[in-house]
Image 1: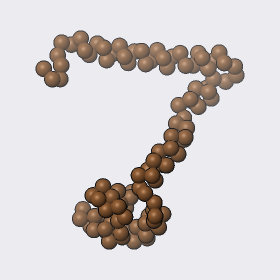
Image 2: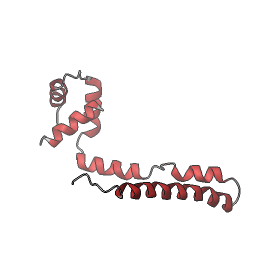
Image 3: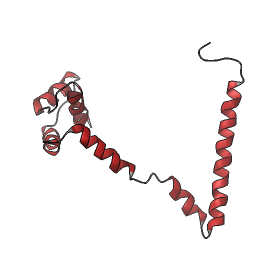
Image 4: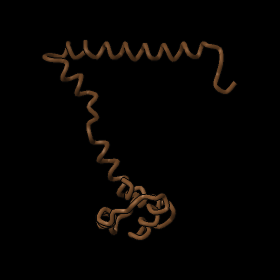
Length: 114
């Protein structure tokens, strides 16, 4: 991650294709030892690519990864749709309780910016 962060800092600073020395310089400026193998691997993977396109492609792939929220309800549901619906109802009630607590905080008569 340190090498990727240094690469992105170099790009953010205006260097569209940072070299190994650029990355080592950034890492050295904050007292971090650089690993030449990791730097070389990163540069070989990004060679000839635009970093904004790489990031955009990664976002699309990451959005396709299931987050797991719906899986827990489906697994706990057992057989049929009714138990799954019954399992979802307590979650909705919990959310409503959280909202009520937030509303009661507003009634205390003061604001952060007063």
